[in-house]
Image (cartoon, rainbow, N blue to C red; front, side, top):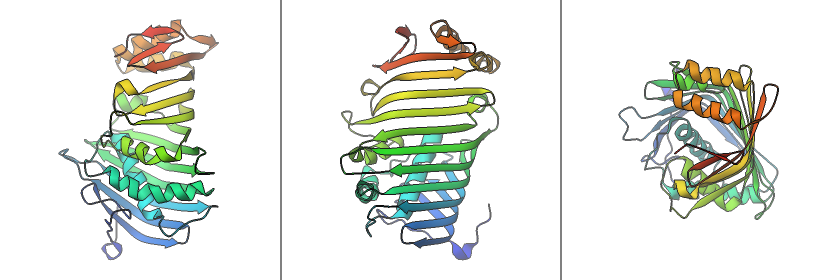
Length: 305
């Protein structure tokens, strides 16, 4: 990726961009108008203790607002950078202790107020490349849409990733969906905590983030996965739980894929799940419940720790 040094700039002010202790940010030919932010060649290097810290690059990033009352306290640039580092941590599992809860609070609280006025925010990344531990994951397009309505009503969040490719091709890459579409609702007060939790910064064990009306669609070739339900996320496994329904079209192909990758435990669990599934031809469905580290499928506990 070629980036002209004449347009390099860096902003690490709290609430504006990522703190230096969290990550360094560079971007090219940025521009911003009221309710809009656009930049090219965004590059984020995570400040991590990992020998090869993860990096996030996007050829383009666009943020736009719709409706509501946008105050000068809302930094769309800061929002773009903070959500980018959250995506980076979500994909790689790498985290930085420098991405503090205070930073996310400073960045997202004004955004929460804007959304509560009935606003909507669209974030779009083009040609994303994430590098970590010798691997690369690319997305042709990634989008996030956050829709608010009032101070008490939950927000609706939609995240979509298209044309996902991971190299080198290993077991994980072989199972990675090509396209993902995730939707959920979340209470306004929980949004900063959700971003902090995903970024890997420890929260109080008693802190819980509830996601409602969760909908997941994922596909890889002829394999289609659909899910819906509710999730509670916590800093501890004991505090996390989920319930809902999942269906997989062409489930036999999914089992074959697990076996081809020599994922013995996963393929065994899938075969056990097949016996307790509701199915119609090659479409298999399950009622799921996850609580206290125990997965119950159609009222049958499965041996997963």
